[in-house]
Each structure stands twice: as structure tokens, then as C-alpha cells.
Image (cartoon, rainbow, N blue to C red; front, side):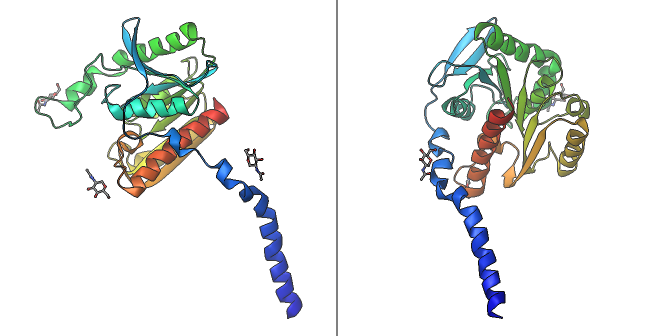
Length: 267
Ligand SMILES: *[C@@H]1O[C@H](CO)[C@@H](O)[C@H](O)[C@H]1NC(C)=O
Ligand SMILES: *[C@@H]1O[C@H](CO)[C@@H](O)[C@H](O)[C@H]1NC(C)=O
Ligand SMILES: *[C@@H]1O[C@H](CO)[C@@H](O)[C@H](O)[C@H]1NC(C)=O
């Protein structure tokens, strides 16, 4: 009996001994939460280039071998939360470029604003209008800023273009999308690089059925991929989370780190 207990305790301490070194220095390994800012004044600048406005947020130093291309939701680079999130990527060490995908006229923060027609807006900003703007930003990053590798991050509307620009020859090297909307199956199967997705529990645009289908398709492509589902979240949480709600705040921050770690590993 004693030897059994001893064996059991021995087994436990062996396990503890094995796990201990990884946790001893845990506080040093934790993500630095001061990198993320949810409120306040953005630090980047808007610069016009070849007929498009770019929101540019620079990290310290000037080594830009990997840079982030940030593709916004329908609220555009005008939305403070988009600028602050782009700034967070810069604080994490990436030169970050967010093109104005709506020529100065993004959707109003309240989509129910009288006179605003979402269907019409989305029809005006389909791939024919949007692809050339994303391509311009990529050309600027490669030719003017001499960026070597492009990590593309996109939210809702912008998430679709993460998939479109990780296709062969489109210019992005690694992609992250939070709650992508209007995503076509052919866009998923056309990827030619690593893609990570953060999904919301409640999302009428990326429904549970569509999300599971996306996972199957990602697997079939043979590319490196990741999908993470965050409880207590709805569409848009990666940018416009209610940070007074602990689950939403956690999810928004975790989705940010998901992107940062993805880019560190695969871009
Ligand atoms: C903890 O990590 C830091 C940063 O990597 C390192 O400088 C330090 O020596 C580590 N401390 C211990 C006790 O391992
Ligand atoms: C919104 O735009 C679509 C497409 O142009 C049109 O079919 C629809 O009637 C419009 N809805 C409203 C409420 O005006
Ligand atoms: C944000 O979350 C807090 C805490 O859950 C809640 O009290 C508040 O009503 C929420 N705000 C909005 C605008 O939903």
C-alpha cells in the first residue's frame, strides 16, 4: 500500500518536476498587455499615395522586413478602434499600413442611419473596386518601403480580402482574419499560404455551419491554418468589442495575440 502511494506521489512530483521549468519564468514570457490600446489617441499618420489614403503606424526602429497590411471593416481607417488596433500591431514591432478602402466614405458607425443602404454600399465596394486598392497598398509596401514579407490582417469586410490576397501571386505571405464576411468557398480553396481565423460565437455572416465548412475547406487546401472560436462574442469583436465585458475584452486581445503570434511564426 505504502509503495503504491509512494509510487503515486513519486509520479506526481515527477510530473511537477517536468512542468516546473516552463512556468518558473512565466511572468517574463507573458504577453505585454501595454502593447494593446482600446481607447485614446492614435499615434499613426494618414498619408496619400497614388490616389489612396494610407493610415501608417510605425514601430520603433526602421527594420521593416515584415510589415502588416491592415484591412478594415466597413467603418474604415476613420474608425478610432481601427487606428488603435493598427497602432497595437506597430507597438508589437510591425510597420503597419491600413489603406482607406472606401475613398473617404466608409459606412456610418450606426448602420441604421437613415439614408444609408448597406446592400448598396457593399455592391459599390465589391472585389472589382476593392482589389485594386489593396494591390496599390501592397505595391507601396514592397516598392517604396522595401518590405520583404507582408502579413495581412483583416476584419469583417477586410477578412474576405485576406483570403483573396493570400492566393498565389497576390502578394501576401501570411494572413489572419477575424470574423470574415461575404467569404466565398472559392476564396478559401484558392489560398496559397498560412491563414489563421478568429471567429465569433454569434455571427450571422460567418454562421456556425459556414464556419465548419470553412474549416473543412482550409484543411483540404493543405496549407498551414488555425481557427479559434471565442465564446461570448458577436460579429465585429476583433475591433469593436465592448471592453467592459470581460469575455469580449479577453477575446479581442486574444485575437490580436493570435495574429501577432501567427505572423511571428509564419510571415
Ligand atoms: C527570465 O526571462 C528573462 C527574459 O528572457 C531572462 O533575462 C531571465 O534571466 C530569466 N530568469 C530566470 C530566473 O530564468
Ligand atoms: C437598397 O439598395 C438596393 C440595391 O440598390 C435596393 O434594391 C433597395 O431597394 C435599397 N433599399 C432601400 C431601403 O432603399
Ligand atoms: C458592455 O458590457 C457591460 C458589462 O457586461 C454592460 O454592462 C454594458 O451594458 C455593455 N454595453 C453595451 C453598449 O452593450
